[in-house]
Every structure is written in structure tokens, then in C-alpha cells.
Image (cartoon, rainbow, N blue to C red; front, side):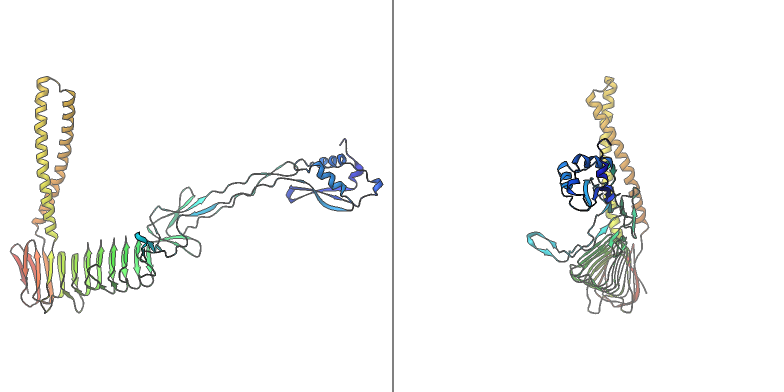
Length: 468
């Protein structure tokens, strides 16, 4: 270059470090002082000759380096580039508590419910469990030559898909494929399982259970606790003055020791070893393997089987039939059995007939008003705007009423046909029915005052009939 000093070039050498982000100079042992006549301009010309364009130190700093050259020096920085900013890596956002701790629910007046611990986390099908937050490239840097220095690419994250989960089509989230319990395992994967297992008892260590799936309790359900499930509930121990609510079936292998406040309800069937002092309702059949004592039962049918096969006390309401070995007791304990299916159907039939009568009245008034408007239109040639609007509303009302009447008429015919079939209701006793047993069906009530062994009772239009 024009100002290059070959003499100075003999005493210095240049290099770059840190992937081009630092330029350094090394000096040999300096010449004698009287021969050391290098200038700042010569030094800057050498630096420029190396191609260093960015981050070169100011003149004051370069002069200080020359002035400090009293002996051999190595890797003295003379220029600093701009390092790239670190990129932000992708990260995962968990939409549930990955480490749920038992936390009693705080109620009003600073009271605490230790039965509501919030440990169990439910997921519904399609619910987002984990979101992937995109990474971001860091700002580019500049090396000492003036070139751009890209940042390292953001690191990607893999969605921790486990059993019962799927990755969304856009790849940005993990969603639940089923209804169930969220499980975050030691393998750092997220799963949704359809069955929640309680390994011991449902008590203060677990809190109440409210699950979108089926629940299996390997112990007992202790007093005052509640288990809710949209699927089935199975309890290997006893239900001890507790509540069970299932969208499917309920199986209680150890039986029910209840109280007036105990509620057990299933949309499906119920099976239990025994039932004592409880309120139990099933939309399907109910089977008890040993005994039912002083309880309120509601089911499609009831079978009390086993060696005892005892049904005594309380109220039993069924649709069709009751089977037991023994009904009542030798003490004459009041035991009431009601057949309610036809009563409920008759009630519904009465409601529909009342609705039909009101519809007929509405239709009659609409037809009368439309006839009057038609006569006015014939005389005047055209109805005024206000009366045309009234006519349009009447026509819409009449159309809706005709449609509703058709639906109700079909339902009335269905119910009348069902009642005409005179659905049979039966009670079968294989050992003994004691005095004190009351039977009720369609307002036909019968009180047993005898010791009746091995019999079958059926209600007909003439009343209760006994078959030995």
C-alpha cells in the first residue's frame, strides 16, 4: 500500500482468533531504541493491509500498544468483531401441572376441605396437553473482516407423545386422543390413560376422585368420600358411608355399609356383595350376591342371590322383576316393593294428552283468525300491511303446531301400545316370603300376612296372582 512500511512488517505478524471475531498482533523483540522509529500511521497501514475493517481499536489504543512494545509480545488484540446473539431454542409449554401436590380446597370463611386435594388431572379428547413454542434466530454478528456471522440455529424440541395422545397435524401441539387421566412419567412422556387405579383406599391420602374414564379402587372407599367416573367404577373393598356416581356400571366386591346420606348411582348396572342402609339407583339391572337390608333401591330388575339371598326392610323400586331367596323377616319387618315402569309411562301419557289438547285449542283459534282474514281480503281485494303481517305469523304458528301435533300423536300411540301389552311384573321367592312384605303395581297394592315358601307372584289385570 502507499503508506506501507516494510521495515515495521519485519517485526510484527497478524492473526485472527475466536472464529474471526478477534484480530491480534504479535511483536518480535524490539530493535534498539535509536532504531525504533515506527509511527502510528505505519501500524494502521499494516492493519488495513490485513483486511481488518470492523472493530479496529481507536488510535489512542493502538498508540498505547506501540508505546508498550518493550519486549516480545504475542496475541495482542487490535480489533474486536460483534458476536452473534444466541438463538432462543424451541421450548415446550405444559398445559397441566407436571408435579401436582395434594392441596386441600379452600372454602368460604377460611374453611378447608381436606377431601378435595386436586391430585387427579383429567383430559378430554382433543384437549391440548403440550404446546411447542417456536425458537427464534439470534441477531447476526460481524467479524473483523466485516463479514456477517450467523447465530447458531435454534435447537428443536420433540413433543413427548405417550399412550393416548396424538401430535396435532401442524406439529405444534400434543393433544389427548381420549378422555382419561393425564400421566407424566419418569420417562418424561405425557400419556392419557382411560382407567384410573387407586392402589389402596380412597381416603384423605387420595381425596375425592372425579375422573373422565373408569376408576378401579383396589381398596375401600372410606366414609365421607366420593368417587365420580364417566365410565365404570370397580371397588375391591367396601363402600363405607361414601358416594359413587358412574356413567357406566358399578361393581362393589366388598359390599356397601351405608347410611341415609350414602348415594350410589349408575347409568348402567350395579353389582355388590351386600347392601346395608344405603340409597342405590341403577338404570340397568342390579345384582346383590348376599343380602339387601334396610335400603332404598331403584333398578330395572333386582336379583338377590347367594346362600342368604335376603331382601329385608326399606323400599325397592323396579321396572319388571324381583328375585330373592328370602324377602322380609320372621319379625314382620316392613319391606316394600314397587313396580314403577307402567306408572311412569302412564304419567308421561297423561302429559302428552294434555299437550295435545292445548295444541288443538291453539290450532282452532289460528284457523278461526285465518278464516276471518280471508273474508276481509275477499271483500277488500287486499289486506292492509299490518293484517298481512298478522296473517303471516298465524300461518307460521299453525305450521309449527301441526308439526308438533304429529310428533305428540306418534308418542301417544307408542305409549298406548306399550300399556296395551300389559307388561308382566313378577316376584320370585325360592325359600320364604314373610309377613310384612308390601307389593305395589299400578295402584294395586297387596300386603302379605302369611309365611309363603317357594312361590312366584305375578300382577295381572285382576290383581296379584300366586303360583307355587
